[in-house]
Image (cartoon, rainbow, N blue to C red; front, side, top):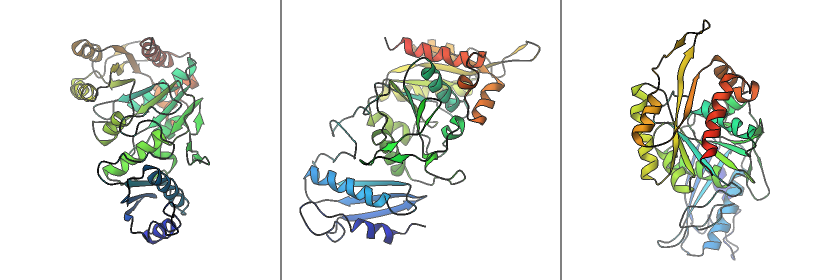
Length: 350
């Protein structure tokens, strides 16, 4: 167990720039919270010196991260009202506005209004399909409470950390990956409040060495909460893909997802209908959840329809085995369905 005393002791090693006294003895430490190996520290400065704030944040994150048992360190450095906030380590650009993710040409969010529509399955197979098309691709898992990307991509590696405190994303099937699932044990629940979720997503975006990607796919959790808002407000998105199944229960919340992107000024790349139908062994087509609802909803909302993905046993088997069907059997009808969606998205880049 990590104690507050350990964190405070570690922070005593951080000197205020230009002084011999540390930030704790100066009274700058306002709060320490610890949950599931993640440590959140709040510091309150009296100075408007942005460079001093940047240096303190960098050093504080480094000493906290070095405490045994810490898997995530988040340091919030507050300054007097009206002062531009200090950028996080590895951050770039205008502090007051959105920053592009360093080394990434395009960022595309994959969202759904509700759970159970196969959004993460679509995300991993889309990522691998784009890689197959020659697009250098990364995949960020923003589902902090229920990360599934590590399982579906067959990756359990803990990210390394560079000298400048950036996370090195593990790579699997040619796709660079980042997920909270790499930092916690398989059966360890994430019991965090909203601010911790916000800080984690911001760090994954800005403090991961994505470096030279054509596309970063972001797998969002279901709904329209903290994770979605953080992503849309932190970086300029190049588009949002909304995943649905054909039945009305799913289509009703698709409209909420579309409206979320619209209100946050994110262009909607289109709708994908997942679990569109099932083909029985005798060749009979069975429309378990109905069919065509995604296309009709796209037409009604005036957004592109990117394609439909039928139910294939191979899709589920590939996800369970950590080898997405677009990698394990790329010429199969299942893989070709995902490839068609990837091509439909790519065509809209021109």
